[in-house]
Structures are given as structure tokens and as C-alpha cells.
Length: 258
Length: 333
Image (cartoon, rainbow over all chains, first blue to last red; front, side):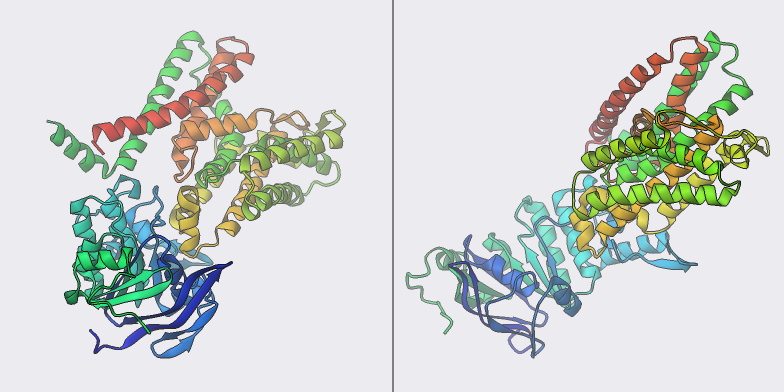
């Protein structure tokens, strides 16, 4: 994975919220076609970091590079235009709409009639089915309303919706937090499938076994600093837990940045 | 046993939502049937073609305003000002008919009034996020006041020979003109909201406004337009009503918003929004008018109509919730 290109690179990112230093000189890299796990305790700065990447928050210091070029992520729309898509914990799905309608909300397939855009319902359904089968989401009927789906299916639809925008980088905020074991497995499969389609992923999760399941690399944040960056094979849940909770204690494999 | 039942019902109806729709419509059809039979037994004049055509002519304004209200409620909003708007438009129409015989001018003024009042409510609800309930309550009072100021409390008659009267009393191809107008409004609006993505967006706003916004849809503007649309077609209902009674009065349309909202809820559109049931609204309007008309035919005081309407509204809200729970239990969802 290290041999592939740098897709996103953050250098020396610092962010204050009033007197609180949320991020302290953070360096963070995402390579193309890679899944990075971002872990850390509550308040470690994960949310701030992904908000900066998704353009919702501007850093006080530091530089952002996209495909090697220096950029300014001044708004969520700008990030989206680059191909950075975020799936938040609240999923942002419309309960009373069908799966197909949710997948293509705001990007419906239409034909023009005079000045009116006319929906192509059949094509919409076919394309929705295609998206789901692309991601090997088999148990979701595109005609079903989202409120009739299980939590795992909803998560899968939210991932599918992000995929529809053909993103280059997908930020997933706690996608498995509220799910049962079986559903979690299915969502992780979807994440793997997204990676197979060439999407880079930043996965935020408290469930370390999920991180180790799908991520190529794990990055540990503690009090706004990166305190560990590990290839999956060289790390265990116990080690990650130690890094997250007590980074000051010396841990053998620790690679402190800087 | 249970699983086979689930399979049959899902095969028949595709999904829960359709299943629910079928139940709501079925119940409304049954209620209509029962009401028609009951009232025909009580009064010989009830089940006559004349009475039904008259009934449809009377409910045309409710049908038209019901279309707008369906989509306003679907977007998670509500408009309480439509009854007062009916009065203002009626009064304006009566005043304008004294100056011109040009139907186009009369209709244009009415619709413009509707759009402006809709824009007024829409501005505060959509762009400032005030609750539609309170905003339109304010608009309701303002409009009623304007109607009173314009008429000084009197009724302004419209000359029965004025061309505008046709819109309320005329006949065309065996049907009353108001019924034709209602039919066209329903057809065009239904087509617009079902064939273009805007119907989906409106339902999306009612279901999860933030999600719809994040999908790149200008939800504020859409909500604003929706209130304008509602004002415009309610204004159309106002002309028809004024033309039918050949007068503009500041007291017209009191309780109109309640009738229309009741019909919408009765038709299965959830009060919390997210779904629109246009056909349900039409059926709901019909059932409500049957109750009102039947009570009159049965020589029961029309004052009871209001009491009945209030109870029906509450029943409809309860039924809406219970039908959903019932289906979910049946399908084990």
C-alpha cells in the first residue's frame, strides 16, 4: 500500500477552539485505494480532523495537499467537488422515501419536457439496483422505504448513496456503532467492496476489531496529536487500546510522529 | 401460517407503504358507501344525480385547496391562513368585478394575491425557520383583518350577469365548471409532483430536511415556492367560491382550513409530513362533504357539522397512527 500515491496529505494541521488546542501539528496521509482507520478516545480530535478534511472546519495552521497539489478546503462543497464524501453517524436518509429515491436524491435521472425535468422511474430503480449489487448489498429492495429497513441495511444504503457520487475519498464516521454483529459484518463487507472499487476510506470507529478487519493502516490520535501510525499486520487490539488510553506509557511499537 | 400471510401481502402490495395506502383508501371507500346508503335511507333526495353534482360543485374549492395543503403538510408544514385567504380573494374579486369584465384580469389579481400571501408565510417559515403553525396563524389574522377592512363587515355583491359568475355557477359538458377547474388543478398538480423530482424533494423535506439539504437541494427556496403555490391555488378556490355565492364577504371561509386539513389527514397524509396522498385527500374531502351534506339532508342542524368535523379530524389522526402500527404488527416489521 505504501507504494501507491498520496491522495490526501495533511501537514502540520493545528486547530484551536478558543483556548483548547483540538489538533496539534498533525500530519496525516491517505494513499490511493487505501483504508485508514482513525482511532482515539473521545476528545482526541478525530471529529475535528475529519471536519477539516470534509471542509466543514478550517485549520488555524498547516497545509493540505490533494494528489500532490496544495489546496484550501474552504467549504464542504469544495471538498465534495474534489471527491471527498462524508457519511455521518446520522446517515442523512429520508425515512419516508424509497431506497432508490434516497440513493439518487438530488441526482435523479431525468428527461427534459419543455422546461420541466421528468423522472425516469424505471431507470432510477435499475441504476439503484446496479449500485447496490456493485457493492454486493444483496438484501435491500430498492422499492422499500428506508423506515422499513434494519439499521445495517440503512447504513448500507447510506454507503451506497455516498458511492453514487463516485468519490475518491470516503469518510465514514462510526458506521458500525449501533449495529448488531451480523449487520456489522455485512457493513464491513460493503466497506471492503467500496475499496475494491478504488475508493480510499477513512474509517472512524471505537470498535477496534472492525478497524483491524478492514483497514490497511491505523492512525491513533491522543489529545490532538498523532501518537501512533501502524500497518495493520504489526498491531493488535491490545496495543491499539493501550495507545488510545495511555499513550504516555512506553509501548514498544510506538512510532511517535516528529 | 404467519409467514405465508406475510408473503401474500407483500407480494400483493409490494411494500408496507403501498399496503397501508390500500387500507386507507379501502376504509374511505367503505365509509363513503356506508354514508351514502345511510343518508339515502333517511332522505329520498340524497342519492340523486342532482344532489351529487351539487355536492361536487360545493366541494370544488375544498378539493383545490386540498391539493396545496396535501403538499404543504407533506413538506412538514401547515397553512392555517387559507380560510382567510378565501375571504380576501372573494372580496377582491367582488371589488374588481365592479371595475372590469375582463376575466383574465380578475383571475390574475386573485392569483397574485394568493402568491403574495403565500410568499409572506413562506418567507418566515422557509428563510427564518419559524414554525409554519405560528406564522400562518399570524397570516390568518392579518388576512381576515384585511377582508374586514375592505368590506367594513358588509357583503359585496357580484352582478349575477358578470362573466366571472360562470366560474362558480356555469356548466360545461354536463358538469359544473368548478368541478372541471378542480379536475384540471388536481391533474396538473398531481402530474407535476409525481412526474418531476420536486415531489420527491418535498417529501424529502418533510422526512429529513437536513438530509435533503445535504443532497444539494435548495430546501429553503423549495419550501418558499410551496407556500406560494398553495396561496395561488387557494386563490383559485376563492374566485370559484365568490362566483358561486355571487358575493365577496369577509366572513367567508371560516373553518375552511380545518375542513381542508381534516380531509388531508383523513386521506392518509401523515401530519408529520414525508408523504403525500393526493388521491386520499380527494376521498377524504368527499367523505367530509358527505357527512355535511347528509346531515343537512337529514334535517339535522348544520351546526353539528363542525362538531362532526372536529371529531373526524381527531379520529383520522388516531386511525393514521393505528393503521401503521397494525400493519407493522401484521408484517412483523
